[in-house]
Length: 566
Image 1 (spheres, rainbow, N blue to C red):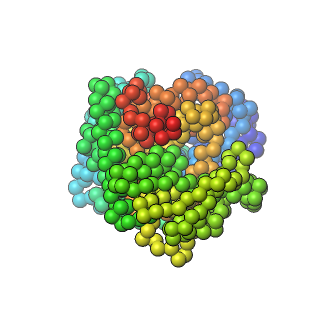
Image 2 (cartoon, rainbow, N blue to C red):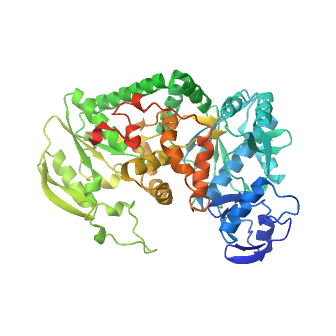
Image 3 (spheres, rainbow, N blue to C red):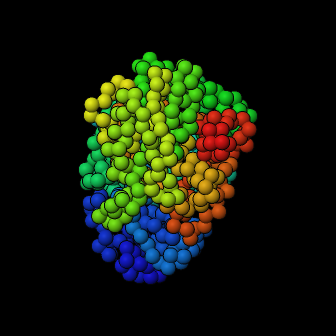
């Protein structure tokens, strides 16, 4: 079989893995910044341990892979750490090594993946006598030095359930009861086995760059820097974000929904309807708390920011409702109306226009208007016409009175560049909105906030804009880059961080999104991303309970029926 690996042609002989071929082509470098980690073939991601030409009988998986290679005309693209597919494989490999190390050191301990902390992951550990981060660090180093080959093994679902039951991993046992397939692929070493919905790197020695730091009741594992992969990232201090995530975990306990298996039980029993009512009541209570704080501080403006599909628009409207209860006159404004005309935005060095950049906003005009409004002056506000791709003036004038509070929503709302130098900053309340989902698939597999936001956006783009899955996913990497640069650095400056996730929404979103995902074929460029989503949605029971979701719910912003859009 002739392959074209990173534009270099090579013949694959029987028994040679993709890694063997990379070595022949001298594409392996020993440096994480340039090292191939996984391979992409016709929209699918494969381990470098995959053997394209086998001498023995071909398995079903082998046939599937060969179809992918045929569809790509033998073109194989190597993914490195700079690519999301490569960094994802790096994270999954780290998970395997971490849980293997803990299993060997403290067999009776329970280790759980929690939330991301910048470029790190926080792990909570319980039941580990004399737990020590130093001991764990040494064990991880030892496993890496062993250069253990990471290959999958297929078990029947029954075998997998029996294995995890024997290890006391009831979280996995309960989750697998809902698996529709009669098999499960696991990674093993000795008597240890674990499952991840995605490929790992070829061996443990590929885990070249990392550090580990103590954290309350556990530790934080820090991954390589995205900009400089040959060294670990800096671990940010995010006390506000961690506090909100911890509160989310308490909500899980309050509602008896601490994992996807619990959610599935609620769907099966019908208790998900009560879960919806309690979750929505908790959100309403939080919006009321935010309004209380704004009024106590006598703020005249709220700057509201958050990443894509976090529910900013609905949050702004629900906060406005609560402010009215306090006798205030809330006024909604959008930073989008301060976009520069598209033909006035200069392209970057690569010739493309970065619409996420702060320079797309007329910051000087916004600062002038913002300062004037806070002084009580009348201002004519612009409107950005997205069809004309330019700013227009429609005679929309605004002047605040003693009871007015403006809520300014936008991607860059927390960026200090937007604040006038001589402004009284005590008049401004900063609100950050993000869905910090506290639910895991199981103790070893988390569902990231970005995954939830992508699901939300796919559903919203299709339901509201008739935009196909492929288009939404193709834009997602650019959206994520913009968030990393322009949103996340300012989240800790917020006066309040609002967790806009709901514990029930994955079961609801699945009904809307699953038909869209399963229609994407393996020939599509986004197939790997779709396949990864489908893999974890396969564990989630679909819920037909849209009638229970109130019209003001944040979830309605994505599935439709939001009363604020009427």
